[in-house]
Image (cartoon, rainbow, N blue to C red):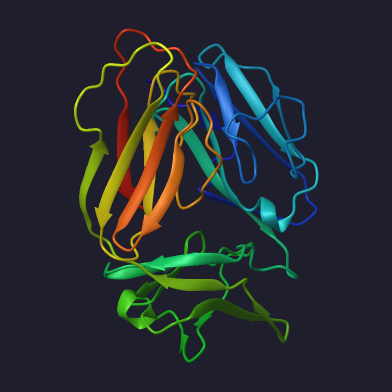
Amino acid sequence: MTPPTLNITEETYVIDSSDSLSISCRGQHPLEWAWPGAQDAPVPEEKDGEDTGTVRDCEGTDTRPYCKVLQLQEAHANNTGSYRCYYKYIKARIEGTTAASTYVFVRDWEQPFINKPDTLLVNRKDSTWVPCLVSIPGLNVTLRSQSSALQPDGQEVVWDDRRGMRVPTPLLRDALYLQCETTWGGQAFLSNPFVVHITGNELYDIQLFPKRSLELLVGEKLVLNCTVWAEFNSGVTFDWNYPGKQVSSASLAGAVPESSPGIPVAAHTHPGLAHTYFPLSQEPLSDREVFLCQGKLRV
């Protein structure tokens, strides 16, 4: 399969804030774009949420008849990120095979950091990435906690303009929060903070109740309970596969939405235990239906 191609061939591309951006993509199959802040399937010729991005058709070639161009009329720091063009009707998005991308930095000297406040889950891995995302490549960045400061040494502590800072996990065990800092023009800039949450990383068992096949009469209520046994403080995400499931994932992690027919509901969480329920009381079922529950540790 011939991959789609972009008119921007660089792996990273740098523009300044308020500049316009235009990236065209050509390929052998129908194309779609994904970019920072955009929906998975942006609507052509319509503004997408807070972005000023639009996607429109453009002229293809004999060997690549499909073409779509992504345009930002006035880029901002928060538009920094990966811009990916992919074959719309092919599920697997493989760089160099079904997708092509470039990473765009939108330099804003008044907003060098673009990450939002977040919780950083730290487990027993050898190292942890602290995602202090930047709009300007090549900055000198220091990672600060309430009691220490770390600078990249190129070996144990590593800085990556697109990923943030990689730090040996033991150095983060006593941190309550983390912030990245840089200095430009004599002024210090701090990123939004990360609250550090130490987690487990062992999933011991998962069971679906009832364990045996069920026989129901028409109109009877079906409730399935999926339970995970995991190490204390482990973050668990549930994913249900069920009849009539929409394309979007039904991943559940800690929220407790209101129960409704045919929708999986994240429920009680106890130390070492996490539950999710699947209530179904009104939707019609065929003679035989299969329900699958998967539990995964959030990394």
